[in-house]
Length: 185
Image 1 (cartoon, rainbow, N blue to C red):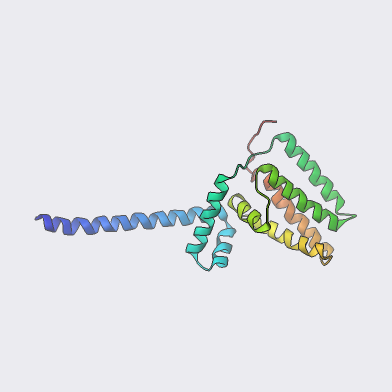
Image 2: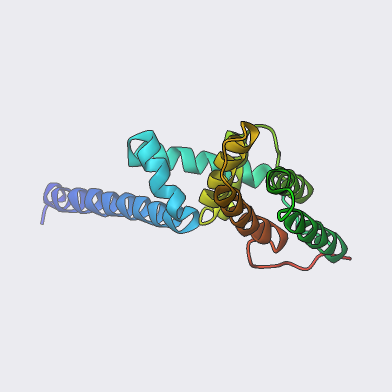
């Protein structure tokens, strides 16, 4: 075989192999993002209007999150937050609006204590979605009711639901997403 014939065979094979490698990398990246963000992946696709834009957005969230100093809580701090939650929950019977407000403040405080920036709801949602993509919808739902609470438009049932939603995220933040790491006490 001549050199020209060999090149005519080898070059297309190399191009096809390279294209397959690139396609495989895209598929692995998409799978990684879907697994990491859970339902937040599809929500972001819907919000941005395309998978490519959503994947850029989610990758940017990961990059920002990786630069944050998210840390586990010492057991004494976890215990204090657990007691504080019990207090807020007990407040619900007599003062449900105040309890929802206090639950929101407690979740925000816990986020801050863990190392999450707490400026602006949209940024909090983005930052939390990286490790808590499966529960971030609970935070959104609780926050919506909290907004109604501010205008005294939330029903008692909505307020009760908000407490449940806050509790889901609170529990995850308190236990490092269900995979508690042990910090020094």
